[in-house]
Length: 184
Image (cartoon, rainbow, N blue to C red):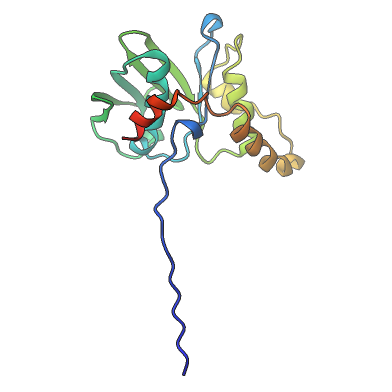
C-alpha cells in the first residue's frame, strides 16, 4: 500500500497596513459637512482595524489621544490600545452609529463615516467618494443610503474593488523610513 503525505504550509495572514487602508478624506482646505471623510474597515474587530487607521492619521495629523466609537458597530474593545509610544483611549458611545471620532491635540476632532465591512464594493466606493467630496454636507444615514448601483450592476463590483485597491482608495505611501518604524 502506497501512502501519500501532503504538507500544507500555513502562513498567517499579515494584518492590513497603511497601504491597504480603505479611507478617503475631504480636502483639508475645503472641509464641510458632518464628516471629514470615510473609512471602510474589513471587519468589526475594532482593535484589529484601528492600528492601520491610527498610523495613517497620525502621519498626516500628528499624535492621536482618543477614539470615540459607536458601541453596537464593533465587537467588544478594551478601554485603550497601544499606539506608537503611547496609548489611545477608546470610548464607546450609543450615539452616532456608523461614525468614529478621532481626537488629537494638534488637530482637534476628526469625524469619519464608518462604512460597514460587509457593504457591497460598488456601494462602498460610491459612499466613500461622496463622503470625501469637498462640498458634501450629507449626514451618515444619508451617505449610507445613497446607492447609485442598480440590480444589474453587481458585475461591476470586482472592477470597482480593483480600481479602489489600485488607484486612489489607499492613502499615499509614507516615506520608507516611517514605514519601517511602523513595522518594527
